[in-house]
Length: 232
Image 1 (cartoon, rainbow, N blue to C red):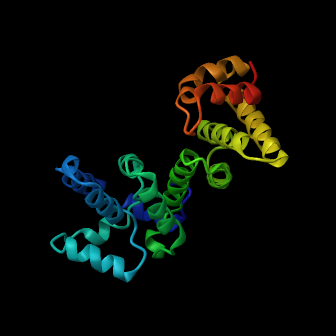
Image 2: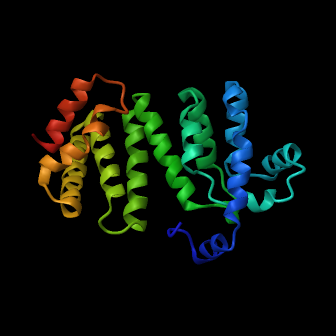
Image 3: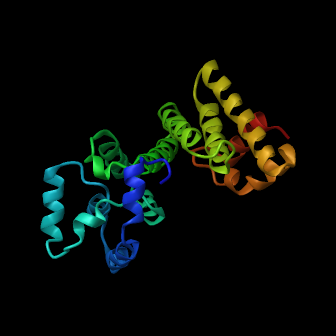
């Protein structure tokens, strides 16, 4: 959360994270037996509320939770919630992601790191649906955030550049092709700065990621794009 303002950073230092962990454990009980509609409602409830109407609905369902207001001020998009969102069917996932990216939040609950994670989930979803032009916008928005807030040389930035390059390679037009090559070149250079070994080591370290393509295409096509962008 170093990307947040000083007030939010100070507030997080004063929070009781053990309380949040206990609540998350309670929420997890019985979730394997939920149907799609109930799971969607539970995921939506965990995301930051965007209006008084949303908060009223949350209060109605958790009226006996005296610490609800405190919990709502945590960054919400953790690894567990990301997994739950991605487990939803894409046609249900996309409207949910759009809703929470487009609506204004209460300033105390408006964490930039949450929006960053939501944009990555949206990029993955759009890629999976074959909507590469829209996915590229989300990858590059997430990448811009990471470049601004992460260390100058960071493996997260490399990973985002790789996905932006592969996504752009599937878009139509010469402009996208140039973007793909630019992202790939920067990813290789930064990876070499971090770990050395040039292209050979890069391809070895990303071997599993390339084999699990986010995009609806044969593996041979993905590997062809990898060779075009990263060599060897």
